[in-house]
Amino acid sequence: MLADPERTTRDIVEWIRSFFERSGEGCSAVVGISGGKDSSTVAALCLRALGAERVVGVLMPNGNQSDIDDARQLVAALGIPSVEVNVGPAVRALSASLVASGELARLGGALPDGSLGADARTNLPARIRMATLYAVAQTLPAGGRVANTCNLSEDYVGYSTKYGDAAGDFSPLAHLLVEEVRQVGGELGVPRNLIDKTPSDGLSGMSDEDKLGFTYDTLGAYILGTATPDEPVRRRIDALHEANLHKLRPIPSFELPASQRA
Image (cartoon, rainbow, N blue to C red; front, top):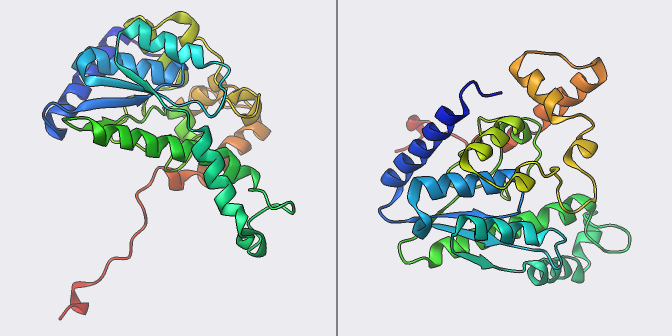
């Protein structure tokens, strides 16, 4: 838990202002709005840092989204401009194109019925959403910078999509645990129903914690070193962290020795 949520909120706001001063005069923050605590808190931080005229919320339902009204509530409460883009047709079209030729099946990359595997089906919408955010950013007159809305808890166990929601140009919540995000959201006056909303991927019908097999409170205490969970949970957290470090590290690149240039 944050010792001084008000100070942390103020510091993040100043950090965002500083980033935008260096990043491009007059450009806007582009935030994908899901209606959950993370995107709601990031949008509210950007609003305080930049003003409503420089924050654009992007709502991106994949076909029908049961909680789309939460996202609409957030942009209305903040008074920021927004655009709603249904990514469902793009997801379906790309999925169909990937399996149409049968090449994936021959490579072993599709299910026996020719459809995409579970991982591809789960992550494709997130990557199309990120492409949408950058398209919106590049249409703005002064340009835009896309917000990464992931928090420390999610990043630690890789609960994000590489080049999907794990991408972005700046990341205000990267060092905040789930409960600390809620504290900052409360300081900013984000509606409580959005701050306290049970985190879920919106795809499986399960909560994040159900899918992970442990609570965010347990994870947070382990990250901070204040408590160690039971051995099976500790092993699962460690395994997830190790397996997903590639999402946090720079792309490995071959370094050409200077001696190999004429």
